[in-house]
Image 1 (tube, rainbow, N blue to C red):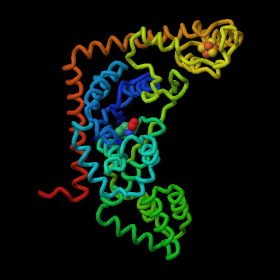
Image 2 (image 1 turned 45 degrees about the horizontal axis):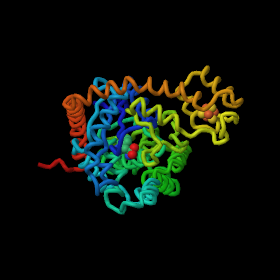
Image 3 (image 1 turned 90 degrees about the vertical axis):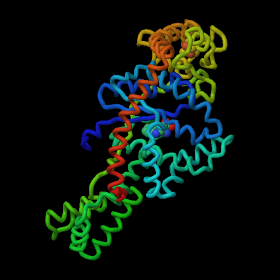
Length: 404
Ligand code: TRP
Ligand code: SF4
């Protein structure tokens, strides 16, 4: 597998923390289902990541692992197009996590926003653990072990992908240098003269140790300005700036796609912990009941009060589920009190039920055949391990751990 091919690989994971809901469907799964036709996709259940926060009640994890895989299958992730596997069944992730932890500065981890955020949000748990601090390193190992080029994630995960890039860069910098290269680069630096050489070294360190891109650009400009160096030296100086040696672990990119945000039944963000969700596999009767009692524009107290769709979460759902005719009908009917909220919700209920019908059918097929689900995941794990083992070979070799 060449690096170029690997760059076409898409990898993403989800923590098994409960039944998936419409927020996951529109925000993540629809995107995965689309990507699976364009890329070599690998999707995995991040059960070790779930353990970083749920280590005191791990029993919920097992059940969620399988129901989440069924949710994925129900949402149209196709085992023929994408591999699905479980993180803890590919223990190579743990070895790479350990090796990467050797070179990851503590400051990087303490600076990741989710670290302090989650600690202050999840006050019922003790998250002052070694494992929780290392959450992004484990995520980095998940990504780098497949040399994945693209990582589809939500905005909250971007800092983790950014840190993964920095860890990869640092790894390549420390372990990816060919012999002789270093000396030639040092020679070239000296040829810039004392003042510029010092500047170059400082900027290079700024970039490589802290990922400061401004420093990188400044250093590149500095090389451009040099009059008295050969073309070969120029290339060397450019290459040395960004690591220069071999790329063992390529830097991944976060794949941010515009996705619809589905508000919860109360208008807040849809989340299991707020109890405002519609599950991916909600029974039709329950969909109907939940939507009928869903929050609307508070100005419409009585049927005769006009409302404003822009202030109503129901309308946000219409934007996702309804065509222009229906939306125009809502807009006109709501603002003139021509329609009631129950009328307004009716087409929405129908659309959601219609969308979920095939998912319920697919899910039932898998629920009735747990062996089939197990074998899909087993196959995914096999494929994942083959790739993971090969990467670890490269990593061990680069780190000088290939002694026998
Ligand atoms: N941290 C991610 C989340 O909470 C899950 C995850 C774990 C992940 N490892 C990953 C996502 C690797 C993308 C790539 O959503
Ligand atoms: Fe919301 Fe529709 Fe009621 Fe208007 S008519 S307030 S858009 S539910």
